[in-house]
Amino acid sequence: MIIDPKEIPVGKMHSYLLGAVAPRPIAFASTIDKEGNINLSPFSFFNCFGANPPILIFSPARRGRDNTTKHSYENVMDVPEVVINIVNYSMVQQSSLASTEYPKGVNEFIKAGFTQAPSTLVKPPRVGESPVSFECKVLQVIKTGDQGAAGNLVICEVILAHIKDEILDAEGKIDPFKLD
View (tube, one colour):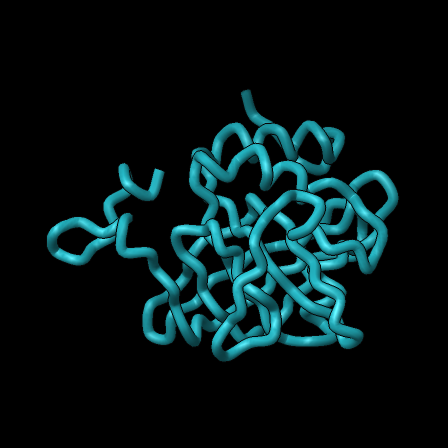
């Protein structure tokens, strides 16, 4: 099969991308707006892209059905800080609850039943249940388009990492089986 992305519906291309680029890690991003409203949302368009400086990128894409932007995107544009929390298996169901489209100002930590842990260097809180949390400053946001489903690459520099001891092996490295 040969596919020209311009000749098929966006949703179909989206499903091919998600099916082929797998498994995908989840960035459970906590952000805050200028008024102090906290947002927590999972993103599967996410990965690490450098170690010196440590760079993480996630993409709160424009909604495909109505071309609107997500609160996480709006928040990092207002307050260029984010905490990228890593999701493990025990957090999956609760994380899914946080992906629901709530009105602006609704705190997904409360809706999904997660613990807000204070961050050290940034304003957004960490997810207390997360085995790894990265406090980040947002370096740049790159819009990849202005139509529905277009990405917004949020380029983040990790300025502090929180790693729970119970996921480390005897050498102090993260054990992927313990990370789960």
